[in-house]
Structures are given as structure tokens and as C-alpha cells.
Length: 303
Image 1 (cartoon, rainbow, N blue to C red):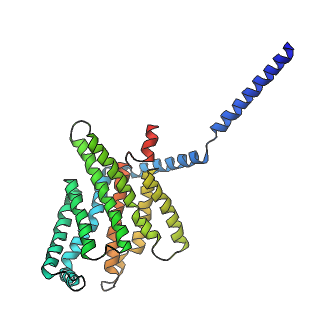
Image 2 (image 1 turned 120 degrees about the horizontal axis):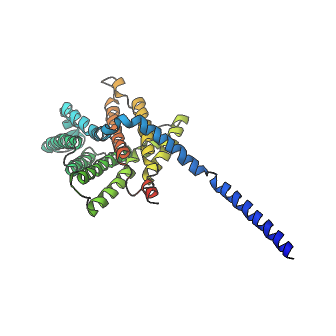
Image 3 (image 1 turned 30 degrees about the vertical axis):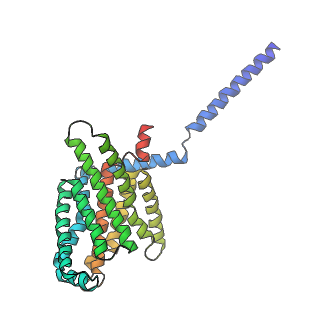
């Protein structure tokens, strides 16, 4: 009996050892999700290496692109002053004197606030002024119920929120010591709001225009990248993908320079071109700053 018990114990020990080896081998095999993470990390490292020379200039490029649509709009109002007055008076039925005040307010606010954003001064006031322009123009030009205009301006607002988040980063660096709890909370929620709003342009792109195989493919890639930006998972890589997609789309579709000056869609294409540049600027600031604390990427660092 002792021999039987000993043999049984030996066999049981061998079985346990074999089972533990099998379980360790099973756990050592990477899951599909781990493989995806490994590949995306390699791509991120490769893109980081390529973009290293641009990294010091990325915040400045992002801020300039965000306000470029406002700069172009101010120039357009100045160069088309009489046409703007006629449209507001005859089609929007705004009294003659108020039309002048409306246009002057837009020119001054866009010019001054855009300059402040570029030089990174008084970020809260600059963003507040540009946000007021978005609202005033939506009401003044009667575009508040235009779904395409609405979605694109939500994305522009998202870019402005990224500028606001960037201004909190500057505050924490300028003043000695750690930023206050209120500043941390503001920055955290502002970055989340900016990430969510930035993707609305792509939502408008998905539901506008004629469908084709190319459009379906781009929409699927863009949709996945948008979801990853919102939840903050591989947010920098996703933002880079969206920047590349929007760059190609902007050059191919909104090529206003190829249209004749009398072409009826030239001004629309030009407006869309600079608006998309502004949204790309917000995405570049996201690449530079990261998604913030309310994101999967940041939670992974904690756990």
C-alpha cells in the first residue's frame, strides 16, 4: 500500500508539474489584444522618431493652425466688405448700422484673439473671444441650423478647448510649485471636452457626400481612430492618423486654388479648407499634450 501510495504521489506530482508547465506556456502566449498593442507601440515609436525634429515646434504649429480659419475669415470680411454688408442687410434683414458693428466686432476680435493664441498670452480671454465669434457668426449668418456648419464648428470649439488646456500647462510651468487642485480639474475636463468635440468633423464627413469603396474604407479607419481619441486609448497615434487622413482629404476635395475666381464654390471650398486646418491644429495639440487624466492611456500608467 505504501508503494502504491508512493507511486500515485509521484504520478500526481508529475501530472501537476506537467499541468503547471502547460498553464505557464498558455499564459506566455500573447493574446490578439497584446499583439495589437505591441504593433501599435512599434508604430508609435517609429512615428515619434520621425517626428522628433518637429516636436519642439509642434505646439506653435498647432496653435497657428487652430486660429488660421479665424485669420482667413477676418481677411475675407475686409476684402469683401461691401458684399458682406449687402448680404446681412438684404438676406438677413439686419439693420444697416448694426451690420457695420457686427463686421467690425468680428474683424477686431478674430485678429486680436488669434494673435494672443499664437503668442500664447492670455489664453482664457483669447479662447473666450473666439468662442463668442463662433456663436455670433452662427446667429448673424443664420447657419446655426446647418448641420455641416454645426458639426465643423463643434470641432473648431474642440480645438479651442485644446488651446485652453495648453494654457493651463503653461501656468503650471511658469509658477513655482505644483498647480492647484482646481487647475488640475479644469485641465482634465477641458482636455476631455476637447477630445470629444474634435471628432465631430469626421462624423459630418461620414454622413455627407456620395458613398464609394474609398469613402467606406476611410470612414471605417477614421471612425476607429475617433473612438480611440474619445476614450483616450493610443490617443496620440489615433490623432496622427486623423491628421494624415484630413490632410489628404483637404488637398483633394477643398482645392480652392484650382477653381476659377468666378466659380460659385470657390469661397465655400476655401472656408472648408481653413476650417479643417484648424481642426488639424487641435489634433496636433493633442499629440503634443496627450489625452489627459481622463483617458485609458493615463489609467494604464497608474495600473
